[in-house]
Image (cartoon, rainbow, N blue to C red; front, side, top):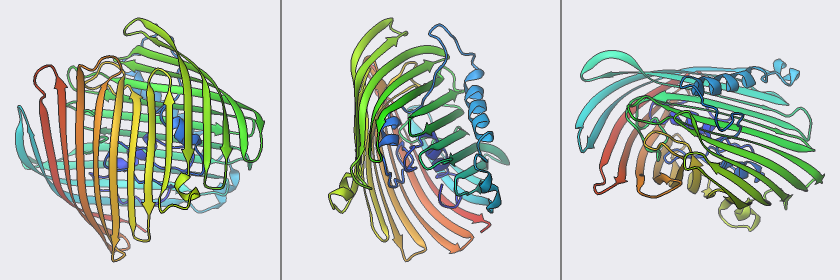
Length: 468
């Protein structure tokens, strides 16, 4: 991972998002709205998997997961994979590590209005943070952590508010093999800490994720999992995960035939809601150093235990990456679409100049978000970002997103979320950065006759100090 750990309380969700939706080829964070820097990816491999959202399952249909086991299982699995992997390449021990402690202090004004509650509140915050890592010629790892403390106009005592942690490990034991591990945890009841575009319940929410990918010349295996635990009354917990295994019977330096098995599972309130198993065959080709494409077709068998149905569908997945640069256009693009039990996909379009960054993104995913929904949901997202560097040390950023969430079966209940933000940051010293930001979010829940809505806005000033 690149970049320092200059994190203010309202943008620190980047740490979570970057690991929660990792892309195995060219690490760009999959986004839910306000924060989505996109970087170049040399292959379509990771893009294809991104609609799976998370990988791996071992529980049967009748198995019930204990309420306390969801997050602990994910956390222990991810932690175990991480602890086993930092020194896959012994030579990395000889390289200097990274240790970057820092702290962010800030003050903000929160305004909130809804059908039942409205008001304004001043908040002061302090957020110590730490980055540790070690680069290596064949293996690298990094850990990030942050805890924020806040005091309010109604109470001057500092209280813990948000916890975040993420880790990343990458190893290339040979020229044609690679192992990547990611993990992240976020616990908060702050609207702007949580992924924008996601329907938000009241109370504290904990989001945990983990992923792993092993790639070799003969095949690959992937595993991902994401869990959401909501402490609010009458709010559902969710977990979605999947695993896949692929063999490459015929392969060359720039192309390969593949046969893949994928299984995806969704749980709501610790009960199995949906399972999809797919067998596909496909072809991947690297047309040039910047352009690659992939196509897979097969059959998908799905079992909806909530509604007692079972069906078979035609399964297809197609994607392309690097199309803009390959055609000599002033922007780059990638796109992917997949169909099994539902149609999902994503598309990104971006342009990077000397001092300017412009990006647009669309995605549709099938999730077990829980919260307001006690069944699997289709989540649509549209996002825009404009970032401009003014005078070298000053960066202006504008972002916006629209998201819609609805059940996979039926459309009588849906939630729409609109987010917007503007920020201006300036590096005062190599170790000191100041930032001013304004954020706005509006959520509308459409169910029955009346669509209740709520709004929240925030104006914030922060100062971040980090040891060089």
